[in-house]
Length: 332
Image 1 (spheres, rainbow, N blue to C red):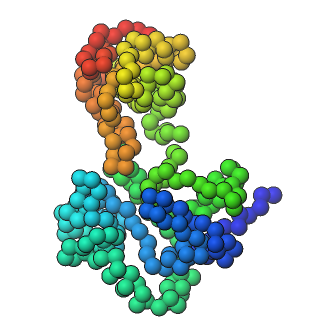
Image 2 (cartoon, rainbow, N blue to C red; image 1 turned 45 degrees about the vertical axis):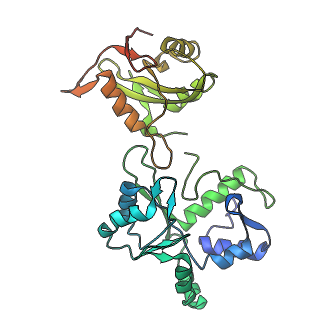
Image 3 (cartoon, rainbow, N blue to C red; image 1 turned 135 degrees about the vertical axis):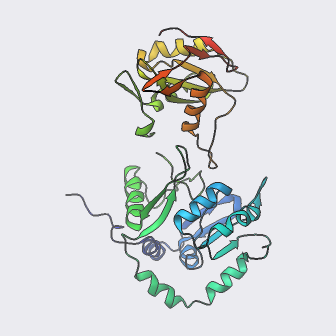
């Protein structure tokens, strides 16, 4: 019989407090770029102060805040060319539920609280009152509204409970045999969920054969000239869909369409060999840096002259060379 994980039945705050009692002086969070080393005891003391929400660019920001009914938004003043104060000013009138905006560093323009101001307001709330509210939270209650990055369309909100987050973390740790002395590197922003072998909805169905784009992409990575590759399905009147691959080459590397197709023919089943190949300098990305495959598909359909209508697909029997120009195609 499988033992019940010790985190089952706890909320995230309760799990953190348990860890703080068991190992108060152990490092809970190390953030070298910010010069921050926080022990479990320090983390336990600071979680009563603030919970931080992420921000998007203007369009995604407004959409995500409306979908989540966010009441408090935390942001910084700017990053590179992005003016976050200006962005929130553009969309704030469309967000009636947003009560407070807090600047986490730097100055704050009118209508935005500074970080010290926000912490000052928090200190006026008695700790006992915070704890009374904390114990009312159940493990099955929502803890996080995780927005997808928009790789296949507009961001979608997914509610995660305290229990699901804790059990997922527990079982991942068990599978990797992590112990108290191990450290986990988190190379993505804290609002990321990351891992994900690809989506079933991205599967290409060619003549009744199921093709997983990830398999083709991983195979292409074995060729030294390939820096990155993205495979999508595009319409075909005979097979339903055909494989289209966009490839970014490594700096200084060269390759041509037939070279890539010949490489695939030698190692992949015939139906997985790309019908269309295009070399690109970059891919369409979301604000979080994920490739937008739906945009690649849309752009490829347009560039190849494919169209869907009256139940049939009209197209030019072509492939693309490294400049995006159409070249006469051939059977596999």
